Every structure is written in structure tokens, then in C-alpha cells.
Image 1 (cartoon, rainbow, N blue to C red):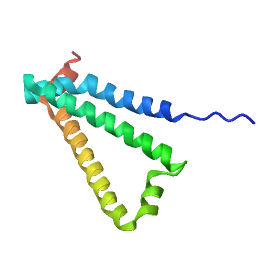
Image 2 (image 1 turned 180 degrees about the vertical axis):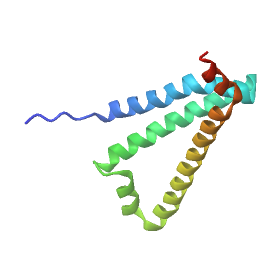
Image 3 (image 1 turned 120 degrees about the horizontal axis):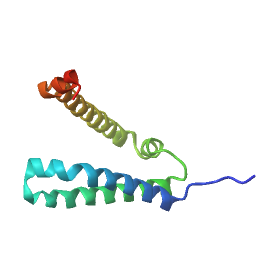
Image 4 (image 1 turned 90 degrees about the horizontal axis):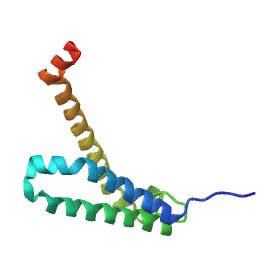
Amino acid sequence: MLREKLQVFHVILLTYMLQTGVVLFSLPRLVEENLGPNGWIGLLAVFLIAIANAWLIALVFHRGKGKSVFEILESVSKWLAYPIYVYLILVWAFLGCLVDAQFVFYFSNDQFSYDITLGI
């Protein structure tokens, strides 16, 4: 029976392109609004973080031999796993709060609701 398998290179390429694409299209405007014209330095840092993230994903995928990140982490050390779990919980909670804040901002803006009511 023939089984198709996603190669490591394709996973890395897909991850890198998704992260870079999101950064490429959404971050420059936000950087210009918040940091000014020298915000390109921050863009370089974000691109380096995306590359490092893709490299770490490739490393786990290659060395893990099919195991998930959590299985690998718990097999190394339980004492190392719990602080990382707490960190992940805090990061996801913080991201949820940011998304919620943006949602509330968009729908509480008077101009936005005025445009919807007039049909503009």
C-alpha cells in the first residue's frame, strides 16, 4: 500500500511562509503607527524570530520521530514541563485578551456603528 508522507522540508517551508506572510502583510502598518519610521529594525527582529521558530519546529519534527512536542517534553523532565505549560497557558490567555480587546474596540467605535446603521 502506498502512503503519502509530508517531508520535513515541506513542513518547515510551510511554517516559515505562513509566519512570514502574516508578518509581511499585517505588521508594517502597525509598526509605522506605533514605532515610527525606525520600526524596520523591529521587523528584522520579528523575521529572525520566525526563522528561529521554523528551525525549532524542524528540529522537533526531525528528532522526535513522530512524537508530539508534549510527549518529548514530558519524557525529558516533568520539572521542566510544568513551567513551560504554565508559560503556554499565560501566553494563550494573553493573546485571547488582546483579541478580545481588539474585538471590543472595533464594535464600540461610534464611527463603525454609524456606518453600519446608515448602510455606508
